[in-house]
Structures are given as structure tokens and as C-alpha cells.
Amino acid sequence: MEKEKFIECERKNLQWLINFRLPSYFYKIGMLVIGVSTITMFVRAFAMEGDTQWLKLLLQKTMVVGMLLMSVARDKEEDEMVVKLRMQSYTYAFVAGVMYALVMPFVEYGVSNALKPEGEAFHDIGDFQLLIFILMVQLLCFHTLKRMR
Image (tube, rainbow, N blue to C red):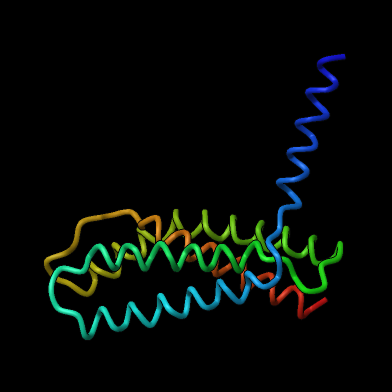
């Protein structure tokens, strides 16, 4: 009997996690966060002097948070089809992200060595680059799939 209660509790928690969505106004909040982060990045790049590496990292993290808010915000008309399209877009984004993480370091290495005669060392892509890519693919796929339905 205890085993069935445990399984039911786990199933309930997993179902809550699968169906988790923020209210739809978080989409606009996410867009605002991304906009402010992008503008501040340009100001930092062209107008600020000195060591502002900490600000760059902070702005990158806030940009990822903004895109995450947009990604998990509920649609105004959330039905079963929209949920299916959202899950499909997450699948596409995951597969594209894995492919990007595997291929992009070699592409960057080849291009940098072709353009620079002294060459450049091989390096992996960063977490920010991968997360931004996955979230952008998910958002673009989701909106494209919604438009095509």
C-alpha cells in the first residue's frame, strides 16, 4: 500500500512539473528584461571605460533569465494543441542544441585557422552561447509552429 502512495505522489509531482507555466504577462516581462539587457550591453560596449567584465556576465545571465521567462510563460489561449506544439519546440531546440554544441567548436576552429595564419587553439562553446541558442531555437520554433497550425 505504501508503494502505491509513493508512486502516486511521484506521478503527481511529475505531472505538476510537466504542466508548469507562468502567467502570460511573464512573456512581456521577459521581453522587457531582454530589451534592457541588450541596450545595457551596447552602452557597456561603447560608452563605459574600465573593467566591466562583471557587468557583462550579469547582463548575460539576465538575458538568459528573460528568455526563460518568455519560454515558460503561458499562452493567452492555452489548449492541448499549444501544449503539444510547445513540447515539440522544446524537442527541436534540444536536438539543435546538441548538434550545435558538437559541430560549432570545429567550425569556429576551422574558420579561425583559415582567417588567421598564426592559428588559434581549439576551444569549446560557452554555457551562455549554448543556452541562448537553445532558448532562441525553442522560441522561434514555437511561434513558427503556432503560426502554421
